[in-house]
Structures are given as structure tokens and as C-alpha cells.
Image (cartoon, rainbow, N blue to C red; front, side):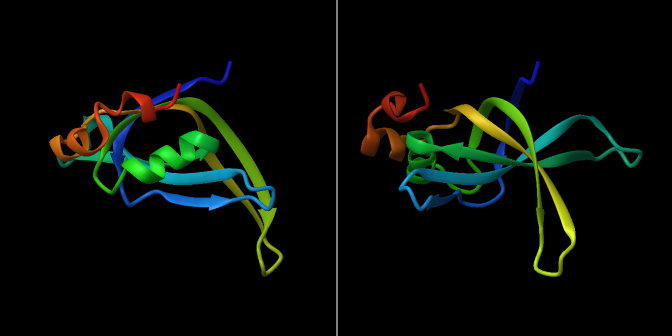
Length: 121
């Protein structure tokens, strides 16, 4: 079973690109707080890369920005590639099936309605 649910804040604005076939693909990084404090009593966070596809990628690019709080439901994926120097690299990321916008601001509601139509199905 490969099932992930995360709640966190975007660390930068989402990216949006298109494949050569015209399919929208985007991404963002979430800062997800750990449920405990470290030895110094400070909370730490994990920074997790999230990939979004098609309509969801376009919606995230349109409505999300750095600092926004979201819930992500998806799966973990690993991929490997060779960098320019010939070194083998590995990435672990979450492929989102659903992204819920948790902190719709008043300006967003006035401009876009409730936002329910633009969220992932």
C-alpha cells in the first residue's frame, strides 16, 4: 500500500510546465512540521517535494503561493537519473492525487468564489 496524507505550507510559489505532448505538470515543496520538538525544544520541519499533473497542476499554479496551507493526498514515487557529470541521482517525491486549499483568504473568495470548483476532484 502506498498512501500519503500531508498538511503543510508551501515554501515557494508552485511551478508549472507542460510536457512536449501539452500535459500540464507542476510542483511545489511543502514544509511539514514534525510532531515533536528537538533537544533544544524547537520544532523542526521536513521539506517534501510534491508533483501535480493536468488540471490539478494548473489549479495549484493559479491559486497557491508561498506560505499557503494545503493538505495533500497522494503516493510516494522514486525516480533515478544521471546528472550532467554522469553521477546517478535519486529523488523521492509525493505525486498528488488531491490537494485541498486549507486557508482560502477573503481576497481569494471574492475573486474566485468559494474555490471548491478549482480544487482537485
